[in-house]
Length: 515
Ligand SMILES: Cc1ncc(COP(=O)(O)O)c(C=O)c1O
Image 1 (cartoon, rainbow, N blue to C red):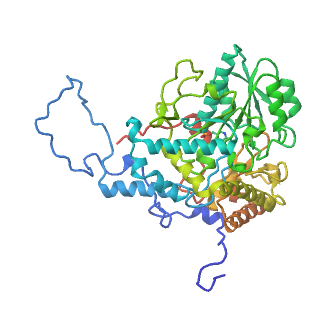
Image 2 (cartoon, helix red, strand yellow):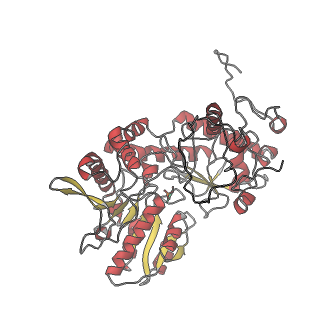
Image 3 (cartoon, rainbow, N blue to C red):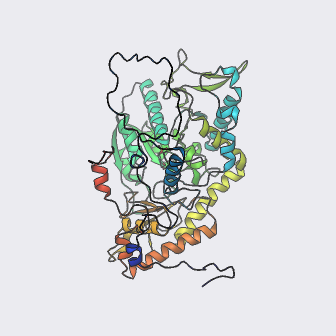
């Protein structure tokens, strides 16, 4: 069917056979160009720059001069441009389409954030500049701290942490410092099964023994099991809320009270704050320490290994142990406390400088452009979108815990039973349909998990298209069209990879082929 403009109105089905067998002479597919490794194009005599001979050059290496070629790839400027542009077109990005990776909040990054982060007065400053010349930047950090404290209902915040997991480490070190001050050496950290994987990892790194708390059949922390695990040796609980099943821990206040009664601290993993921002203040729930992933809740580029920021908000009890540096209001303007003041309980420092300034700017821009009401709308829309996806799919896929969910919805692989298609196959077939797969096999509490986080920045049209695609794939799996899945992706630059081999024996170095 064509519309009046002569464009097809329906997705044109490709048979699995044509997907498999269609090859081209050049290795390119339409305008998607095949690309060799940089060492395999150009040669070492070629260069994109024309450097003059250095006059009067004298070797000062004392006889340790390299005696063979360094082997760097030599490319002209147009070759280098093409190489990197072609590679960039193989990336899937949030700017290209829906990115439903659960627990990652892959959402639109408003361009105003980028513009502000690049303002010369912010983008070009250096952390070693005299304080008098960076008053604007310190004001920005102070404002950001104010917003974070207001939104969480917590009295203090450490801004310098560079990722969510880094924030977790800071939180646990703060707790350890508070316990040391009390003269207590507690050795256990409780981590529910539904916690993010970084939680037990952080506790272990910090020298604690991790005790896992089981989840109930409906995906929440088993309150009784938690209470039974508390005792004088428990330093803290690390609870992810909303948890990795996409559920709000409804017993959270009772959990906080029980942990406090046992003399422990309540660490909350607040990376999923986007589901509750502007609606719930963790300080009101009894939280003692919580990191916030600025690169999730408040946008900012995320997921491609780019910089992140994981500020940690702290309760009254933990605030005195916060790390340096922090901004204070001095008589002449803003000042930075760089060293632990005499007599202070601060546990020290975790970063060389003051944190990820670019992330701070983007997060504050996001907050100020949304306003308090707009931030509450972020939470509402992210929850609405996840529930819309769940409600639109639960008659064909198996929702693990039923609705309603928070900002992400969890399916397991029961709907694929007897089809011969696995969660991995299903996810790979999504790539052929032009979608980045959802998070697979996580959380571990359900079999063959598929965790979908649509985020608030998707339109209904985009969600409907996504839902339609998943319904189509589900129908194909149930109709026995196993070929569509078993070798997928058929249309990606690289086909099905041996992921186990790649993880066990990664090839990290290019070897020149024998002539
Ligand atoms: C719930 C949760 N906790 C912790 C983290 C770790 O954050 P980061 O990757 O910034 O270290 C993430 C990552 O997105 C997360 O989703």
